[in-house]
Length: 427
Image 1 (cartoon, one colour):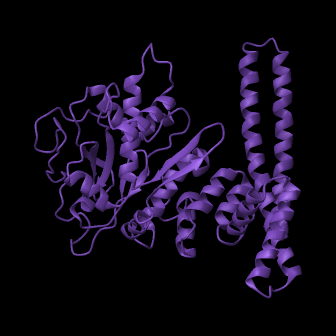
Image 2 (cartoon, one colour):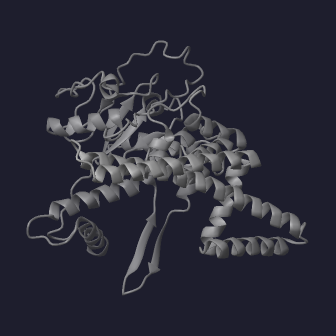
Image 3 (spheres, rainbow, N blue to C red):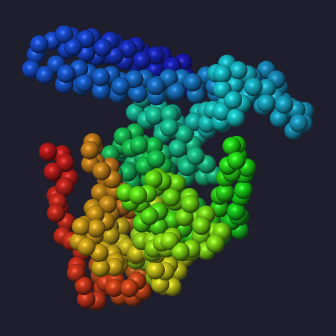
């Protein structure tokens, strides 16, 4: 951040302070008002004030990044070139310790701030500008640092442009990145990263699978942590199955919480197998697969509900091997929109909920998040995009008991009750 940018940020913060004063004054006036609805006016003033404070916090975070990166650069210049790797490490540790003392944080937090500040000031100019403008939060900026890690400069710039430049050739659809909660923004950024990563997800998954392991960490008060690093399909299946079993045990005579029941069920299964009184239901997890990936013509990632992008080979195995805990959703090779869902004979309300979740992504309290479907890369050797392809997916058998798919008998998907939902929400 140059001196001019710092001045602009400070001016914007002065304007924000003036607006905050106005909101505070409005709230005080409304409290003493005898108008039609003074409480409603005071509540609105408080909400507006919180939004302004959030914007100021983002601008302050931008200033902190500027000063952290500036101090690190000045300290390195004063120290000069390190004579050895050990000397360079000592210099970095001294800088980290100084920042930790100034901010009264741990050295680990200070090191993370310095690293993220360097990334933002040298590799992610759009993200830093959005932070300075208050249009994204510090949490959003950290997500961008995480999801561009390991990408080359061109790929990192493309990811930034997709989410932060509305004029980009392939800009993100739905609401702006700053209006997504950080967790949802991370999911969307990770999806884009996986699809556009220069190294295929298959190769990266093979490397990751080699590191699978079970870890045990003692803790205080007679407690301990047990964690497993597994392939995504195994982890999601275990989690979903344990959750369903825990819910089956809930009732008026059960005092344990869902979280406690889930832990107890998993411990019972690991220690003694499926014991009497502990249900072992089938988990139902959606796996969304591009049609061409299912056919093996492209390597576009599939999406595992509750996790995110997974290798297409994993999706093909789940569908082809008849994994009973997973329900497939096939997507159009041209638009990326869902075509067909293989499902057991649920009641219609559950199918409707699944359809709405696929269509809308999340709840519509505020501005709609919207799905960010992206057509897959068209493989060479199949002619022009879409040529000779029909919208109907291939007739893949569904090995789940009672499931229905293309060419099979059973109730169709519910008709979308709000086909013009964009106009409805805008109104």
